[in-house]
Length: 264
DNA sequence: ATCGGTACCTGCACGC
DNA sequence: TGCGTGCAGGTACCGA
Image (tube, rainbow, N blue to C red; front, side, top):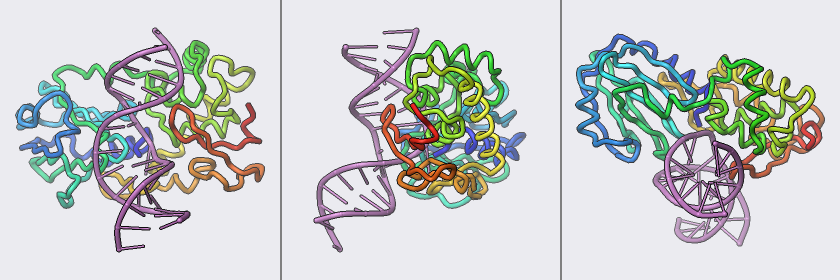
């Protein structure tokens, strides 16, 4: 579930871990471990102190100073929890000099990896949507022929936007999800750029969207789902014009839009 | 180089 | 009650 606002909320909720030492780490459900066996990973982490915790798009990068980087992606159902019970879907247990951090992930689409250098997959991502300039945004937009919804999901275009915020931003900008990215004209690029910023900023302030089970590391739910205007509202009336919200597939993902407010 | 489709995994809601 | 189907915040990888 976690997109940029949810991951940002999680990162803020584990800020207290900076300065803590990892005493030991234990892994089960090895699917989430990338490149490396659990013993090697545990050995790389043991005794290291958390120097900083940063978010890059949907990635959480925990710097261990000279000890490299612990890189965590929450996938669809990943959770980081400060304390709590070890359950059926707990795949990582980080014991700290004070407290414990658990990695839970029902669908196991998330990942945990260690890297000595700054991780290449993170370095390859596009810019942060809240930091990039409108000029860079439009330059990049014009080079891409794909449909705008698919482009917003592409992490090399902008990092951190997922299915919820792509749909919500397109609605606010009045742009149809199937519109060609390179052919967006007039005021539309500007409207989209502003809509992305507004949606993400508001969602972060709301602690993210809790659709079914998302919570931050303290177990707190977000409440931006109460302000979704199109996402998972197919068949319901548009809050602007009353038309029925429709759902189409784009890049194999559900895309929700108002056929009247978002013309092709 | 880009793009679209598929695979990965578990749980839930729905209709029969 | 059970069974089949479709759907769910994600990315990686394949061939065209």
